[in-house]
Length: 48
Image (cartoon, rainbow, N blue to C red):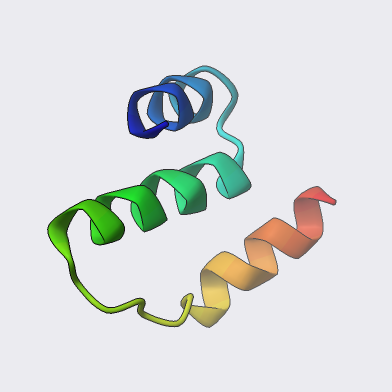
């Protein structure tokens, strides 16, 4: 999933794909989830 979401993000610039990539990295590394930055949320809202 991580490779797919990164490739999709790099081809489209889709913020949601980047967030999925970031989440998969955190899960793989066993780090706790960090709340999304407000700027990232605002950018995602603009794209939808």
